[in-house]
Amino acid sequence: MAKNALSFVCQNCGSAYNKWQGKCESCGEWNTLAEEDVSGVTTMPANLRPKRKGRLFKLETLTGSSPDAPRLPSGMGELDRVTGGGFVRGSVLLVGGDPGIGKSTLLTQATSLLARAGHRAVYISGEEAVAQVRLRAARLGLADAAVQLAAETSVEDIIATLSEGTPPRLVVIDSIQTMWTDTVESAPGTVTQVRASAQALIRFAKKSGTALILVGHVTKDGQIAGPRVVEHMVDAVLSFEGEGSQQFRILRSIKNRFGPTDEIGVFEMTGLGLREVMNPSELFLSERDLGSPGTAVFAGMEGTRPVLVELQALVAPTSLGTPRRAVVGWDSSRLSMVLAVLEAHCGVKLSGHDVYLNVAGGLRIQEPAADMAAAAALVSSLVNAQLPVDAVYFGEISLSGSVRPVAQTSARLKEAAKLGFGRAVLPETTRGEPGGDAGLSINSVGSLTSLVADIAARGRKGQPRSESNDND
Image 1 (tube, helix red, strand yellow):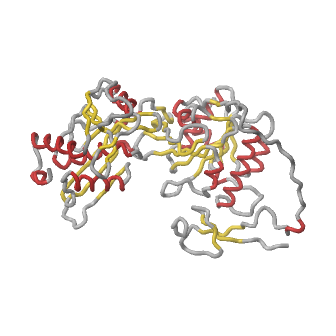
Image 2: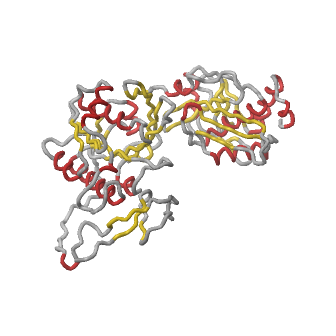
Image 3: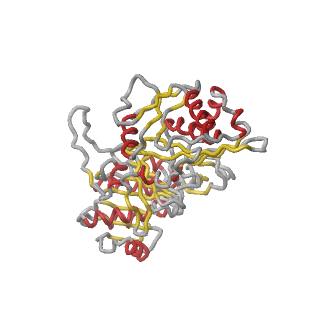
């Protein structure tokens, strides 16, 4: 009989090595290599394995029509927004998030709402006992929902149980790292087990038409743990984000074969579970610092949803040789670029100042349209100038110092007008959507220099700092 092929596999990225080493060369993590059997599902020699003749299957053409995949609404509007309108039959979703962020709470609520609607919903936990899941449901006021529970980790037993009777409409596996299959000889949680278990569960979902949700652990840098091939196998990857000190949570779509990829759903964590936030802009601006220098409101877009958030900046003199640059909720390299443009084209000297930038509320901004709002907040803090409290800012800054237009201008302005803002500072553009259809006073900016000059003039009229006179 052939010997088992042993290899050392990184539990973070799935890379395999012939011998153990302290650091994975692919992902750079330390002490993540574990010995696994990668020989396959059988150790039988190739010449003794039974030969299977392939079967014929029908080939289709590009012409013709296919019926749209029917969707199953979850009963939670924010969850349906992120998934593209509900769960598609036979689809597989991978949900990741930090420990304690509320993944189990969200999925308990979703399965309970489906069960109350008359659908068969199954919740299988590999980390908690049935009694613990019942306690959570009772705390959320969902104990009367006819959700079928189980505490099981064997994939073969799970598939055999789910195959009995009518196939479930929704199955939650919490979590995929605790599942194991006897087709491979590895411990639960290893890369080989996660890949094989996910493959077996996905095959069952595709054959039965059951919508399957897999809960995945995340690494310390926020990436879903386990082999990256699992993210390619599933139909959608959702990330549940949020800060432990904040009461709201954000469900973000990273990959979705049946809907948009940049949508977000906003929830608020309460004593009775997660509450949907229909207007997240009001939540992010609820504790806004009115009249404080260094704050600017950014009109951003998250998928098809406009979101208004407050950007806070603090520019303070430093005695250190290398000034400190700290940013929370935005790309640090983007901040460095904005600071370089301010110094090179606007004469704003920040080499002797510490710079801190924060997106209020804990939301993470990814689009470059926040450049102008960040620059306005930075200059406002430097010259101690108060920005108009009823103004919103958006626009992309180029390396030449010009302000470039961004997409979906009308949606941003309509959201700002709905929340009571009266003016908008946006790029000059001769193409794209018109800017004045929302009833706001429009201030078009062609270059960053004019924006800095306007803010500096406000600082001189007020009470400028002594050190800001040389930096205007």
